Length: 278
View: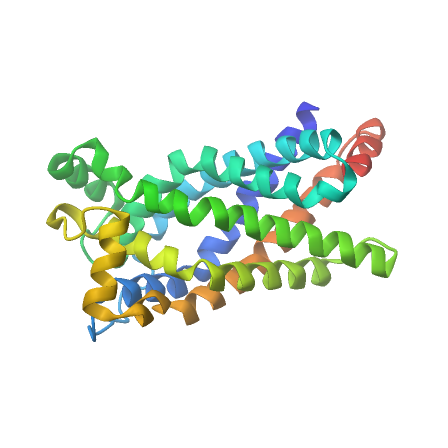
Protein backbone atom coordinates (compact mmCIF):
# COMPACT_ATOMS: atom_id res chain seq x y z
CA UNK A 1 0.00 0.00 0.00
CA UNK A 2 1.26 3.47 -0.90
CA UNK A 3 0.27 4.81 2.55
CA UNK A 4 2.52 2.29 4.26
CA UNK A 5 5.36 3.08 1.83
CA UNK A 6 5.01 6.84 2.45
CA UNK A 7 4.98 6.29 6.22
CA UNK A 8 8.18 4.23 6.03
CA UNK A 9 9.86 7.09 4.17
CA UNK A 10 8.69 9.77 6.64
CA UNK A 11 9.62 7.63 9.67
CA UNK A 12 13.05 6.83 8.22
CA UNK A 13 13.87 10.43 7.37
CA UNK A 14 12.72 11.67 10.81
CA UNK A 15 14.76 9.04 12.65
CA UNK A 16 17.86 9.65 10.49
CA UNK A 17 17.87 13.40 11.09
CA UNK A 18 17.33 12.99 14.85
CA UNK A 19 20.36 10.70 15.17
CA UNK A 20 22.70 12.81 13.05
CA UNK A 21 21.90 16.09 14.78
CA UNK A 22 22.16 14.63 18.29
CA UNK A 23 25.34 12.63 17.86
CA UNK A 24 27.34 14.48 15.21
CA UNK A 25 30.21 15.56 17.54
CA UNK A 26 30.92 11.94 18.56
CA UNK A 27 31.02 11.01 14.87
CA UNK A 28 33.48 13.84 14.18
CA UNK A 29 35.81 12.63 16.97
CA UNK A 30 35.58 9.08 15.54
CA UNK A 31 36.48 10.28 12.01
CA UNK A 32 39.45 12.31 13.29
CA UNK A 33 40.74 9.39 15.37
CA UNK A 34 40.54 7.09 12.36
CA UNK A 35 42.10 9.58 9.96
CA UNK A 36 45.07 10.31 12.28
CA UNK A 37 48.09 8.26 11.27
CA UNK A 38 50.25 6.63 13.94
CA UNK A 39 50.25 8.86 17.01
CA UNK A 40 48.67 11.88 15.30
CA UNK A 41 46.92 14.40 17.55
CA UNK A 42 43.13 14.73 17.43
CA UNK A 43 41.76 18.28 17.52
CA UNK A 44 38.53 18.84 19.46
CA UNK A 45 37.49 22.09 17.75
CA UNK A 46 34.70 22.47 15.19
CA UNK A 47 32.92 19.26 16.15
CA UNK A 48 29.81 20.29 14.21
CA UNK A 49 31.65 21.11 10.98
CA UNK A 50 29.75 19.69 8.03
CA UNK A 51 26.48 19.05 9.92
CA UNK A 52 24.26 21.16 7.61
CA UNK A 53 25.45 19.51 4.41
CA UNK A 54 25.26 16.14 6.10
CA UNK A 55 21.62 16.60 7.12
CA UNK A 56 20.79 17.60 3.55
CA UNK A 57 22.06 14.17 2.48
CA UNK A 58 20.82 12.13 5.45
CA UNK A 59 17.19 13.11 4.89
CA UNK A 60 16.88 11.60 1.40
CA UNK A 61 19.28 8.72 2.21
CA UNK A 62 17.26 7.57 5.25
CA UNK A 63 14.04 7.99 3.29
CA UNK A 64 15.37 5.90 0.36
CA UNK A 65 16.69 3.26 2.76
CA UNK A 66 13.37 2.71 4.50
CA UNK A 67 11.42 3.17 1.29
CA UNK A 68 13.27 0.14 -0.10
CA UNK A 69 13.73 -1.81 3.16
CA UNK A 70 10.10 -1.95 4.34
CA UNK A 71 8.46 -3.12 1.07
CA UNK A 72 11.34 -5.58 0.42
CA UNK A 73 11.00 -6.94 3.97
CA UNK A 74 7.23 -7.42 3.57
CA UNK A 75 7.61 -9.20 0.20
CA UNK A 76 10.39 -11.49 1.48
CA UNK A 77 8.56 -12.33 4.72
CA UNK A 78 5.51 -13.34 2.66
CA UNK A 79 7.57 -15.40 0.21
CA UNK A 80 9.83 -17.18 2.73
CA UNK A 81 8.95 -19.69 5.45
CA UNK A 82 8.78 -18.23 8.96
CA UNK A 83 12.05 -19.78 10.15
CA UNK A 84 13.87 -17.76 7.45
CA UNK A 85 12.70 -14.36 8.73
CA UNK A 86 16.32 -13.47 9.60
CA UNK A 87 17.29 -13.98 5.95
CA UNK A 88 14.44 -11.67 4.88
CA UNK A 89 15.68 -8.95 7.28
CA UNK A 90 19.31 -9.38 6.18
CA UNK A 91 18.45 -9.19 2.48
CA UNK A 92 16.07 -6.23 2.87
CA UNK A 93 18.73 -4.37 4.91
CA UNK A 94 21.36 -4.93 2.21
CA UNK A 95 18.96 -3.83 -0.57
CA UNK A 96 18.05 -0.67 1.36
CA UNK A 97 21.73 0.06 1.94
CA UNK A 98 22.61 -0.40 -1.73
CA UNK A 99 19.83 1.94 -2.87
CA UNK A 100 20.60 4.68 -0.34
CA UNK A 101 24.37 4.49 -0.95
CA UNK A 102 23.94 6.60 -4.12
CA UNK A 103 23.10 9.54 -1.84
CA UNK A 104 24.96 8.42 1.27
CA UNK A 105 28.43 8.16 -0.28
CA UNK A 106 28.79 11.75 -1.59
CA UNK A 107 27.24 12.96 1.70
CA UNK A 108 29.78 10.96 3.70
CA UNK A 109 32.75 12.04 1.55
CA UNK A 110 31.86 15.73 1.99
CA UNK A 111 31.14 15.25 5.70
CA UNK A 112 34.39 13.44 6.48
CA UNK A 113 36.50 15.93 4.52
CA UNK A 114 34.86 18.74 6.50
CA UNK A 115 35.30 16.88 9.77
CA UNK A 116 39.03 16.56 9.06
CA UNK A 117 39.22 20.30 8.34
CA UNK A 118 39.76 20.15 4.57
CA UNK A 119 36.86 22.45 3.64
CA UNK A 120 34.85 25.19 5.34
CA UNK A 121 31.44 24.65 3.72
CA UNK A 122 29.57 21.83 2.00
CA UNK A 123 28.99 23.68 -1.34
CA UNK A 124 32.68 24.66 -1.46
CA UNK A 125 33.63 21.05 -0.69
CA UNK A 126 31.47 19.71 -3.53
CA UNK A 127 32.83 22.32 -5.98
CA UNK A 128 36.48 21.74 -5.12
CA UNK A 129 36.25 17.94 -4.98
CA UNK A 130 34.63 17.89 -8.46
CA UNK A 131 37.17 20.42 -9.80
CA UNK A 132 40.20 18.51 -8.45
CA UNK A 133 39.11 14.89 -8.64
CA UNK A 134 36.21 14.96 -11.09
CA UNK A 135 32.70 13.75 -10.31
CA UNK A 136 34.28 10.44 -9.25
CA UNK A 137 35.84 12.23 -6.27
CA UNK A 138 32.40 12.44 -4.65
CA UNK A 139 32.27 8.64 -4.77
CA UNK A 140 35.74 8.14 -3.28
CA UNK A 141 35.82 4.95 -1.24
CA UNK A 142 32.52 3.75 -2.75
CA UNK A 143 33.63 0.11 -2.72
CA UNK A 144 34.78 0.32 0.89
CA UNK A 145 31.55 2.09 1.82
CA UNK A 146 29.46 -0.77 0.40
CA UNK A 147 31.82 -3.27 2.03
CA UNK A 148 31.11 -1.61 5.37
CA UNK A 149 27.51 -0.52 4.93
CA UNK A 150 25.82 -3.48 3.29
CA UNK A 151 26.87 -5.89 6.07
CA UNK A 152 26.26 -3.09 8.60
CA UNK A 153 22.68 -2.38 7.48
CA UNK A 154 21.93 -6.07 7.04
CA UNK A 155 23.32 -7.08 10.46
CA UNK A 156 21.89 -4.12 12.41
CA UNK A 157 18.36 -4.42 11.06
CA UNK A 158 18.45 -8.20 11.32
CA UNK A 159 19.60 -8.18 14.98
CA UNK A 160 17.02 -5.49 15.76
CA UNK A 161 14.11 -7.29 14.10
CA UNK A 162 15.09 -10.70 15.51
CA UNK A 163 15.50 -9.33 19.06
CA UNK A 164 12.07 -7.71 18.76
CA UNK A 165 10.49 -10.95 17.59
CA UNK A 166 12.10 -12.87 20.48
CA UNK A 167 11.19 -10.22 23.03
CA UNK A 168 7.58 -10.00 21.83
CA UNK A 169 7.23 -13.78 22.14
CA UNK A 170 8.73 -13.79 25.63
CA UNK A 171 6.71 -10.79 26.89
CA UNK A 172 3.58 -11.80 24.93
CA UNK A 173 2.72 -8.17 24.22
CA UNK A 174 3.81 -5.25 22.04
CA UNK A 175 7.01 -3.47 23.01
CA UNK A 176 6.96 -0.03 24.61
CA UNK A 177 9.17 2.92 23.57
CA UNK A 178 12.06 2.34 26.03
CA UNK A 179 12.17 -1.36 25.04
CA UNK A 180 12.37 -0.52 21.33
CA UNK A 181 15.14 1.98 22.12
CA UNK A 182 17.15 -0.52 24.23
CA UNK A 183 16.90 -3.21 21.56
CA UNK A 184 18.01 -0.61 18.99
CA UNK A 185 21.02 0.28 21.17
CA UNK A 186 22.06 -3.37 21.57
CA UNK A 187 21.73 -3.99 17.81
CA UNK A 188 23.74 -0.83 17.08
CA UNK A 189 26.54 -1.56 19.57
CA UNK A 190 27.06 -5.14 18.35
CA UNK A 191 27.06 -4.07 14.71
CA UNK A 192 29.35 -1.10 15.37
CA UNK A 193 31.94 -3.32 17.03
CA UNK A 194 31.92 -5.99 14.33
CA UNK A 195 32.21 -3.54 11.42
CA UNK A 196 34.82 -1.12 12.91
CA UNK A 197 37.78 -2.37 10.80
CA UNK A 198 35.71 -1.82 7.63
CA UNK A 199 34.88 1.66 8.88
CA UNK A 200 38.57 2.57 9.37
CA UNK A 201 39.32 1.49 5.77
CA UNK A 202 36.37 3.52 4.46
CA UNK A 203 37.43 6.66 6.38
CA UNK A 204 41.02 6.45 5.10
CA UNK A 205 39.91 6.02 1.47
CA UNK A 206 37.33 8.80 1.72
CA UNK A 207 39.54 11.46 3.30
CA UNK A 208 42.73 10.85 1.27
CA UNK A 209 41.59 13.12 -1.58
CA UNK A 210 43.94 13.55 -4.53
CA UNK A 211 46.98 12.49 -2.44
CA UNK A 212 46.02 8.88 -3.41
CA UNK A 213 47.98 7.34 -0.58
CA UNK A 214 46.04 4.09 -0.97
CA UNK A 215 45.29 2.49 -4.34
CA UNK A 216 42.22 0.65 -3.14
CA UNK A 217 40.73 -1.48 -0.37
CA UNK A 218 43.40 -4.23 -0.34
CA UNK A 219 46.27 -1.76 -0.64
CA UNK A 220 44.76 0.24 2.24
CA UNK A 221 44.56 -2.90 4.43
CA UNK A 222 48.15 -3.90 3.61
CA UNK A 223 49.54 -0.38 4.17
CA UNK A 224 47.78 0.08 7.51
CA UNK A 225 49.00 -3.33 8.72
CA UNK A 226 52.55 -2.63 7.57
CA UNK A 227 52.81 0.94 8.89
CA UNK A 228 50.57 0.89 11.95
CA UNK A 229 49.85 -2.73 12.86
CA UNK A 230 46.51 -4.53 13.17
CA UNK A 231 45.40 -2.51 16.22
CA UNK A 232 44.91 0.49 13.88
CA UNK A 233 41.73 -1.24 12.66
CA UNK A 234 40.25 -0.66 16.11
CA UNK A 235 40.79 3.11 15.86
CA UNK A 236 37.76 5.14 16.88
CA UNK A 237 35.95 2.03 18.16
CA UNK A 238 34.99 3.72 21.46
CA UNK A 239 33.22 6.73 19.95
CA UNK A 240 31.89 4.56 17.09
CA UNK A 241 30.21 2.01 19.37
CA UNK A 242 28.96 4.81 21.65
CA UNK A 243 27.64 6.76 18.65
CA UNK A 244 25.97 3.79 16.97
CA UNK A 245 24.66 2.37 20.26
CA UNK A 246 23.02 5.65 21.29
CA UNK A 247 22.22 6.25 17.61
CA UNK A 248 20.49 2.88 17.39
CA UNK A 249 18.38 3.62 20.44
CA UNK A 250 17.34 7.05 19.07
CA UNK A 251 16.89 5.82 15.48
CA UNK A 252 14.75 2.78 16.25
CA UNK A 253 12.95 4.57 19.10
CA UNK A 254 12.01 7.51 16.86
CA UNK A 255 11.27 5.15 13.94
CA UNK A 256 8.72 3.07 15.91
CA UNK A 257 7.21 6.17 17.56
CA UNK A 258 6.80 7.97 14.21
CA UNK A 259 5.25 4.84 12.68
CA UNK A 260 2.77 4.63 15.59
CA UNK A 261 1.87 8.32 15.34
CA UNK A 262 1.32 8.08 11.58
CA UNK A 263 -0.76 4.92 12.01
CA UNK A 264 -3.02 6.73 14.51
CA UNK A 265 -3.64 9.54 12.01
CA UNK A 266 -4.84 7.00 9.47
CA UNK A 267 -8.42 6.04 8.61
CA UNK A 268 -9.48 2.78 10.32
CA UNK A 269 -9.26 0.58 7.24
CA UNK A 270 -5.53 1.28 6.96
CA UNK A 271 -4.97 0.61 10.64
CA UNK A 272 -5.81 -3.08 10.37
CA UNK A 273 -3.47 -3.31 7.36
CA UNK A 274 -0.65 -1.78 9.40
CA UNK A 275 -1.12 -4.18 12.31
CA UNK A 276 -0.94 -7.13 9.92
CA UNK A 277 2.39 -5.82 8.66
CA UNK A 278 3.83 -5.85 12.15
